[in-house]
Length: 496
Ligand code: G3H
Image (tube, rainbow, N blue to C red):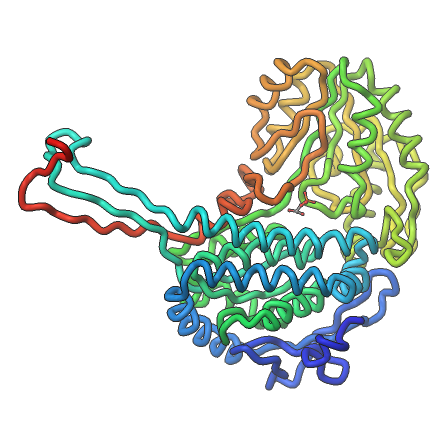
């Protein structure tokens, strides 16, 4: 159970502690932040409201711990990460319980998130050993005008202190996707969890604590964005920010200084359906891509662009599957569970009402109870409707009927987002041409968008992000190349 057994030390009364300098602590602010259970809409947990002084302390420890960690052999860093991965998987039940209570993630998906996270950490350890164990050797005479008098040796060095800010929808998995690469590369890490998801993050961090990482190398500060948000992201001690979330990331990137940024900020992933597509496959993927975790995924299908000639048939198939979705509490492992906050539910409702006023066809009756919104397919959506462009982050999916592939590509590319997209057709040549024309970081052919497997590159164009994620890319992003040049007194040619 959460907060008991191995996790008892992270809880003080009914308030979870924050993690600094290798210890679980109460904030001297004396204030707490309540975490509302999306299902009951009552306070489920409380966490510390850390102060700016506590953030400063964490930054100091992170800086000094990093120096020692960078001198720790790579194989030893990997060994500790493997240990943390095993402990994480061993404690999947209490962590999954937190995910169910804080973010209403369906019970089975919550367990999968923790297991996937353990696997991600192990893979990161292995990948790090491979890619950080190698450097480059360059010789000067390949560049015009040079003799072979210079040997250049390059290696990858850590950046220093990484600030990791994961989102509510994968608080554990998208935290470890930043923690693992940061640590294997010799950095220290400061984690600022999302409010909803903070307790899952604290449990996950405790698994790293139990694995025996050095004091101060990992810290986790909880609190109000208004008090410590900007303070953290503009802190002079931070050498790199890895953020996943909404358009707060745009504000962060404007305020951050001369440091590398890794940003993943959402999407409006289009699903283009051609006349020759296997409509049963498309319908199954629309359900998985559009409605899993109630549409609260940046890679969810957020608009279907279907050729008019097959639109009726597709809508009928999707509706038949929507009718089978189980709606209810996450504890019952329902397919559709309450969205994360009341304000999210209100926002989604605003999009639905706008579509209603402007004449979209409601394939199901719009139904809401608290934060629980029943799945809804909106047909005959037109570009003047907000739902055609905005991300609902809820179980509402618009269908736009198109008369040409170009029309579909045009709609996809007119979006401010450019995360992923998908195209369904049996003609691989057409699929590749469409993929090339779509301005998105990834295009899936004959499957719904998805970030995983976690070692695949994952990136967004335009407002969807900066940089590329995926295990290898994240390790590289959290390092910098360092060169040492050996200057010889005279040219030297091997075997010359
Ligand atoms: O919400 C954003 C996540 O990066 C999406 O991950 O494709 O595994 O659901 P996913």
